[in-house]
Image (cartoon, rainbow, N blue to C red; front, side, top):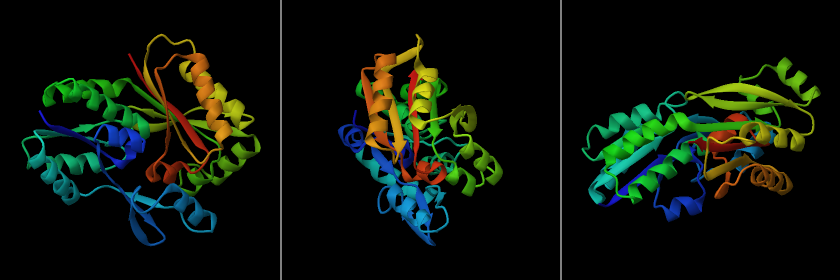
Length: 280
């Protein structure tokens, strides 16, 4: 059977992964400086950072609307035997609601709530590609994906709190105190929602190593096929340190390095990095 797996731009997969798996990407909207752009199409995270650094307000994100989903689903529904679209968590955006509404008009389009964001979302997409490649029927793929979402672990450590403060997710006083104490909070996805986890203190690279150690060291319940290291505007030496730390702690077959999309960067800003993987 001919099929296509598609996803919102929030899945943060690399261009190579998207192209080699023929993944259809539908971009969210980014509102910046009174203008609207498409995530990853005509705006990049660097555009957002430059605008904010120049004194502009934070960017805002907006969901893909039902008509946009209908347009894509109509095209793909006619070209393929089935379409499976995987959304960012319904608790983060109305994309899932809008895609589900659009899919009602097609008998071969299936919509899945990833219950995650960034490459936590991307892990579900990659698993969908694998299952479809193995020849499973679309309903069976959807059933397996719905079970998988509860086994995805996604988290990030944040170097600077300025974007969280500007976005109202952290008070100015709390941000000042955290910066003075060199506290680096871990942001975790729990049951489709974001929550603050452990706070690390000190040099960022040392905090990063401690964070990765806490997440994967000594564990026997990990699916070792793939782990993502997803980040926004960090020096190469820090990214190399993250990859080295992962490889020293676990024998993942793939250690995938990807850039965070505009949607994630809008909320967390530069200096954000996470490890994202699946439990058995």
